[in-house]
Image 1 (spheres, rainbow, N blue to C red):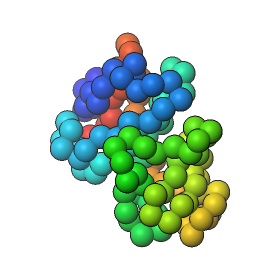
Image 2 (cartoon, helix red, strand yellow):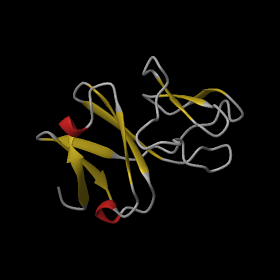
Image 3 (cartoon, rainbow, N blue to C red):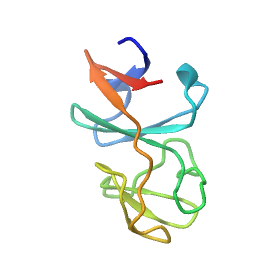
Image 4 (cartoon, rainbow, N blue to C red):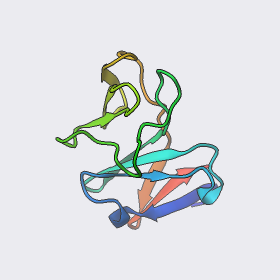
Length: 112
């Protein structure tokens, strides 16, 4: 895919899980979170809209116990997986910054 960078194989992300990618990967501008739901994937900049901190404290630990919400480990904000909208916490009503990605032939690509 011209103009896009391959991040990983979709199967590198457990179904229902999330994986973080450092900005240096494939020349990205910012750290990313990629979430997988079946054959679909969603990506966001790994920065809470409340204070700009990364969401996770430990690598790839982004989700609550149900796997339905992303959690900011700094102040406990909760975000929906499918649209990044904050449903609880100090930035309620704000959203994570979405990143355009595509799944093609089993690989995840991000626009650069």
